[in-house]
Length: 284
Image 1: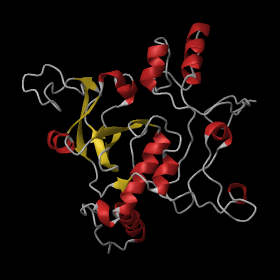
Image 2: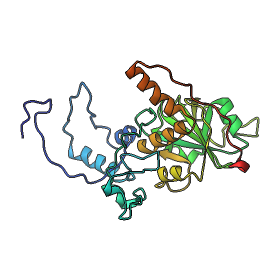
Image 3: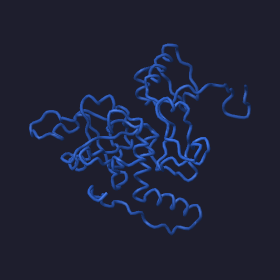
Image 4: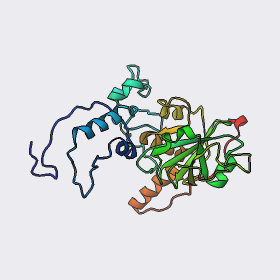
């Protein structure tokens, strides 16, 4: 039907069939002739059947994802999200994601993150100091394609497999490249390639205490992950994990209070307790 009052001239009905997150780089690799909507190309573009088929295959091979992940534990008061006895339903998993249309609760403000996927890198107690000292994170060579979605500005996290702690928030300064520092993470001073050659440069975006691997909200956010913690995150997972970390160190509350102070004219906002030392494992 024509819509003479809006920018879009015509509207049509469609059925929501699959919820996926496909990085633009992956889409263009699958369909080089794909024209993405920009201010120059207008809102919609025709595509050939070959391009449409290539994009559809790429979308179909992408994992299912949620539109939103709660960082507060998902305590929804909506009757549709609660059990008959008032208990919370667990977050959707598997095929249930197809009918998951959750959105933030009114009081659930998210930490600002760059739109797009994030990534969890790995380290151990021996390599962590080198990761932070160099501002360099690495992955095994076979994960090169997995890290292709990382862009400058992407939210990055570091998982210490020895201590079972996730550190953040870091910001990617580069795309994933091979052997930015060939001698990194190697005990051989003459090494020509790093044992973790897929590397990015990072900087600290927000310094906070780490989150332990057994945190229940963390496990809700990452429930759809397979094969361990290390690997890519959807945007919903990235935003929720960043918000969880920022919340526990007080930065998220500070941001919310500051925004409220700007809006109301009252700027008496206490500084957040950022950069607290992490809790010792034995006292948790």
